Image 1 (cartoon, helix red, strand yellow):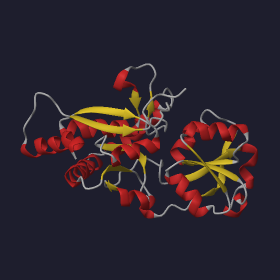
Image 2: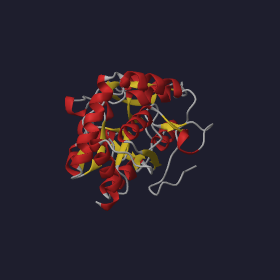
Image 3: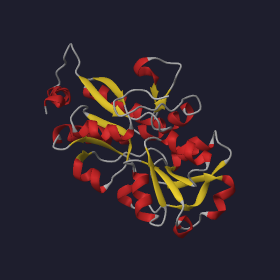
Image 4: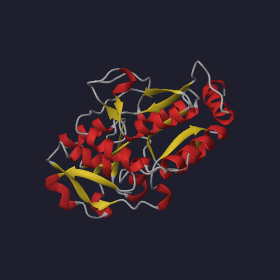
Length: 273
């Protein structure tokens, strides 16, 4: 719990109304390969290069907590490991509820980022779009999904006959799809729209995943047992929703998606080519 000292201190400062000349740091794990949620503006340097809905949310939380924000880029799966091990205070990276996440983490209340997580679908080559209107159409078909993601879980649950291929980040899945090694990749609709804007040869398959209420919207991952910070984060999420920030942040993220790029990091946070 020593690694969570900065978050605990921020909570105490918030409650008693004190200030500290040396601001504690809010360390947020993020995988910036997921437009419009988190991606990169290559014209900027340092922390300023990270943009997207979740970046706006992280900045809001840090400001409200009276803390300096440090976004720690790493792979999507590594974000989750970093929270479990206490290397970061929390992870914000387009996460949805999953049974295993509920067991391993404190989960915040949900926040809504447009249609990004509530609609889950498959991308395929345009000439194949009419083939895939039912789950049975994927029997024996190689279908990709990001490792440790909601999409991977949905493929396992709702496309039992498909041959699941897990990859580390979406750029790898997209390359496999374009090369023909995969017939389809599972993605959130917001991400699908960002991909389709630059890949005219792809299309949304007719099949859509069933997304139950518990799977809708996004949430923040915190270390199991860190109830004080979880409660504070939930209060701040409620304030952001009441203030109407979510639609504005999402609209801004969609605009930025036209200039930003998706950067990929390994499990140690090193940028990948």
